[in-house]
Length: 249
Ligand code: SF4
Image (cartoon, rainbow, N blue to C red; front, side, top):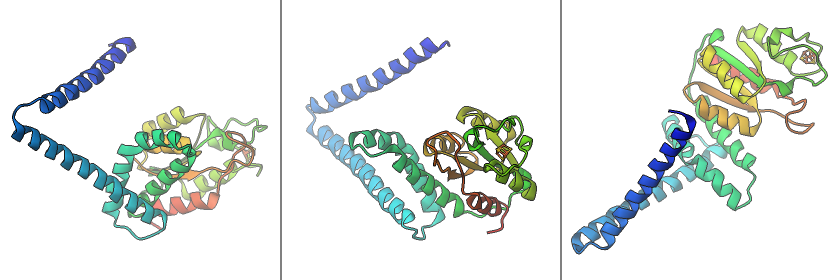
């Protein structure tokens, strides 16, 4: 099926879905069987109440997690799944209320990291991958670390050197990707058990969601020179994440 057909197919499915909803609503509204109408409205009310309750409970759990309260691992996992499901809607709502998307993305990364940190792991070093975008490398550097991070000459001008040192110290895998798509490709090809991803809010959020079958800790980069240019990282946080996945914490 070519892309045009896929697009038309999906639009057709969406139109069919709304046609069915339309038909169902009309069927209930114009039904002469008042018992059927009453049952349908009751079921709809129950469904809406369940959705509202889930949203309220998820908001409370998320708030408690963000405030550093101890929450059971299973509840955190359920909550993360609910937030994942609602995420597109949450992002649309940010536009309506002019809330910066990055603020919400930060919250998502914290909820994800808290869940991961609530687990216990004991991975081998070779199953752990560090991955960062190439904006971490100084723009004047002529060494092609995106081919191989070991091409870094460790001149001390940027945090790529620190990643190389961590790679050597713990024997983990480390990559510098030219972009988010390549980062996903590298992760999928290398099949690590755990990923420590360093990126901006947008790339981290979409990356964590796209490779959700891996255990991912997201670490936000620092951007003292603006986005995507000579970025920096808190290397202690990266080392802490490595030790955690190795079973040290
Ligand atoms: S630390 Fe490595 S990547 Fe960074 S500027 Fe120096 S040689 Fe280039």
